[in-house]
Image (tube, rainbow over all chains, first blue to last red; front, side):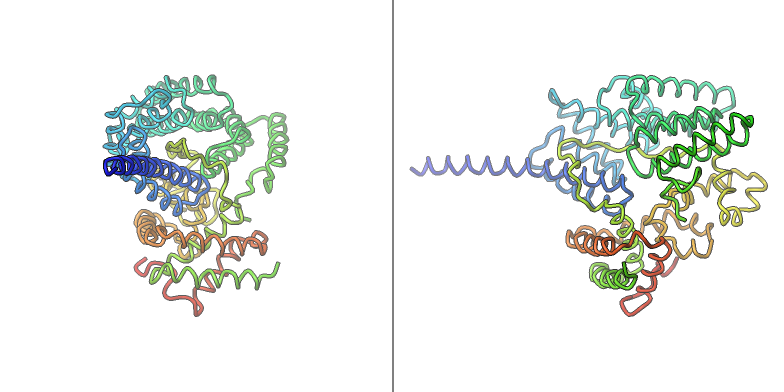
Length: 276
Length: 200
């Protein structure tokens, strides 16, 4: 009787512990996603609070039932909190556990997160190699988007210190890789935004303007990127107005007036979010 | 909409936040102001699209800008052009590029929390101080808000204050009016201290 009772108690305890672990991982993911959602809408402080809660939950999940997923979520939260050394260790732990079938999203997230932690610790060459790998091979859109954005930022920063010919070669290679991403997923506004940014550096303002318009129409992943895209769009528009022949200028102004009306802008060069 | 009703709602908010941020009243203004901005944009609607199973890092905006964009940023804003008149006229991109990351986030992208955090400098058009103080003050704000941010009741209280003000027609006021209203309240009896860090 006693043996039966203790077996039942052990079973109950195992079920309870397992449910508690799942709850920790589930909660960690929820808090993390909540943080992302707030960060996208400029809620930086509340986002930090959510990531911190996600980290606490993920740490408990890693302690009680370690898995590739729990270490991935822990690493992502640490990365967002700027704890790059800890993030790197967590992502490496995640790979040590190995990802199961159907977890390629987690594996790609961990790999991109690992690259981000390398980058933030000054290992830019290693980070660039991983971003290139993700951009070429991953089918997981969020990892692709992050890799594309980080790679673009890194290449542009490095190119600014290069001689003209070398800079042109570097930007041409970047443009080519962004075009491949656009071909694969034309409806992703972020790729058009990145292309517009690179076009701004190569001086192709007409293309930059068109890509920025396309990015706005297709949608961007955060309010901050959306505003930066609007600023780029207005900058290109004004510079183009100054440089085009009168007939082309009129056509551009008419097109921009139509877009501005559609987007609810205050005028052709003032987005609605700009203060009066 | 009555301005007085909004002001009363915000005054209640100041009282409540003072309980969560004791002796940290320099943070009350940016927290309350940005909460109002989020509430007007309905960010506090806890949206169903929050996914529990898929997590990843999000992309950021591209920080490396071409020289023309940076020059245009300083030249096209009247106050910035005045503050950096020498650098703009000389085309001193080294200085302008160094000042750009802080000023673009505050002035160019109009981040509500940062605008409120640097309100005294923005009002005085003291952009160089923003550049010098940016990293330290934003880091300090994040650190000091953490104990309150860990308390779910803090966010609940903030949500109700901002949502109430939003429902009373906060969106019909200009940004500056809302800011002045909160600053006025902080200078009143509800305030426990200065609205900016003492050493700033």
